[in-house]
Image 1: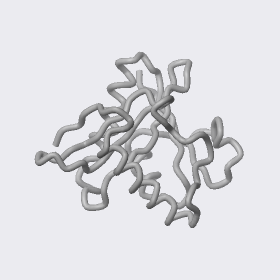
Image 2: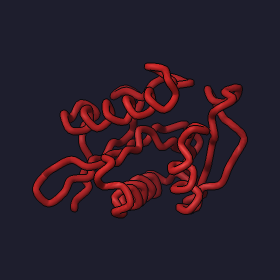
Image 3: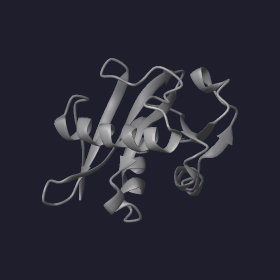
Image 4: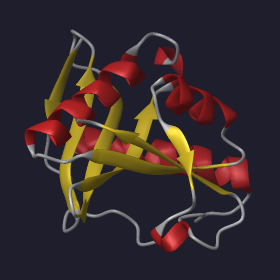
Length: 150
């Protein structure tokens, strides 16, 4: 397994994000449950894809710079067949390492109340609940988390 930084427009990254959005749409019954501005090439500081040894893309994740040494984890996703294999942990560690290299002090993220596996994963990974921030502040089904990196 290798994890590499790729451009936002990378075809494998795009396909993984589309699968992630389809799962979210199915869970919430709406084609777009993004409370805030959807991430894009213009505002994602770094995006990574995890690939199996044969080159198959199996997971992804990105970071948005929120300013003041804070980043936001965006579009974390692992293909269902690879869940529970440690891929998500490796992607998250890669994101955290990249953020530390930038001098960021913490990472935040938002997930939803219909994503208990994500909540468990982030909690196990050292992220604690925080008040909803930014575009998520008044979103009832948003759950926000943060982890100090330094």
